[in-house]
Image (cartoon, rainbow, N blue to C red; front, side, top):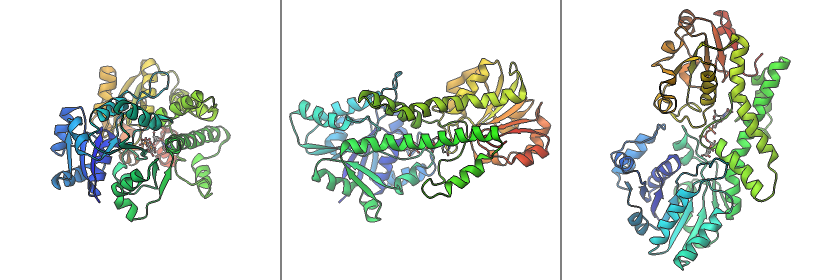
Length: 435
Ligand code: UGA
């Protein structure tokens, strides 16, 4: 049976969930305090760049299964299931800022007119769902509700595909009634035999952090192996390929690069360390992953320095600003650390990205030059540094670039180009782990 659902928060997690649940046949209201965003969404304009989102948004708005509202109270009253998909950003000390989640919980307390299932999709520290349950009970003097933990595993850029084809769905629950309701909400996935992991709150909460921290560790591991490869004369791509052939390791997330970024890995690894500290358990491995990742970003600038010498007053073309391809998101992007380091060295920076230039302008203002394409960026550059693995950079017009640059130097932090071809054109080439 289809359900009446409110999803609070229309960021990556909330918006994709709202669209997805509507597409499954549920009746969904996406709620956000940002009225302008709500108007745009109701007009079919997605606030984020995400492959396929436009069509799904339009289709579900048209079917009238989906609408957006900034009236949280009436949306809660109308719905049986409330998903919380608001932000949980890190505080300065690495703790998770739960204030947005708390605001939603308070709204739910004020509007608990009937039985409801409150589902946490936002990534929240271990213990939060239990706390939510106790808090609502205490505030409303009612137990006519259930709390469920349902962490999200979407990747930016592949969010729609990930939502409709998840490897598994994790549900932390306590009551059978809420389990049956969640089965209805996810009926379409249930029917195609997507694996569901039914567990307690703490397990569900920890799975999310463990998942992201494991992937961050895998990347950091291959980055360290890359750094070693450079020194001893091995090729990290071949090492990674061979490791990936071992079914116990698997080939995914073994691409060496400039360090991981984004809104999740950096935040969730720090949060896991804090959660460990809170319970007196040393998360030393994850701590080292965080440190090593910071060093990896700066190592990319050191590579530049090794080839170019003193960086002072040099003109550097930075190709790629987003934290990965297929997104305009620059949160914790390695490009930020690299550019800041170059700015410290008084470099002139000419930057290009197919999607993230607007976000870059908000971050760097007039400190760097924004270019409409890669050719404009490389003109008169002393070196070119490739930071994001956009497909269009795989087929760079190197013949033309060779004519436009001041010095033929390429730092390829994503191992996208063929060193042989680049060197044939007279460039000095530095990849990651490819001596
Ligand atoms: C990540 C997880 O992959 C999702 O499962 C999770 O839902 C999400 O965080 C979240 O917690 O919300 P996302 O941040 O979109 O998704 O990005 P990823 O595709 O995982 O990439 C993260 C970073 O790792 C990027 O900077 C990427 O360039 C880097 N990376 C990834 C590598 O350097 N090497 C690799 O082999 C893979």
